[in-house]
Image (cartoon, rainbow, N blue to C red; front, side, top):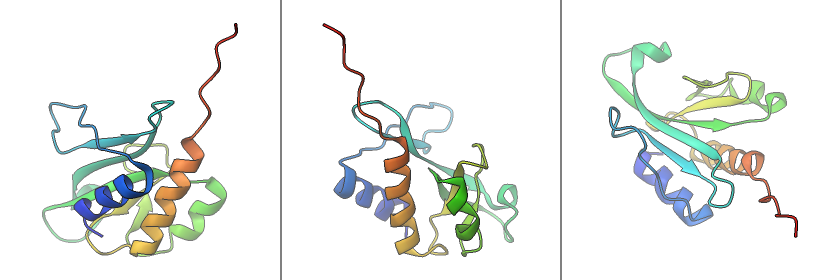
Length: 125
């Protein structure tokens, strides 16, 4: 799955549009819940060597939240790595270069969305 395909899936499935909050890294984005403003995905372009990958150049990645009990099984899959710049126990990095299976990316994004969703707190009357 490419970055564009990933963002299209997020828009179709969750109505999520990317936000680009960092001027110094204009290609980095976050996807947030509209109600509670929590991040459920963080995307960026990273040098391959920073991820321990062979080859030169960069790769588009997205970090998603994952239940620690599930992350171990996903880490054995191609294109799924310990989180880059996030808590490695609760987040995974997915390569958006065709290495990770599209079904895994969709399932992990759905999981991340569910794990970060909470009902907005009601104000007391």
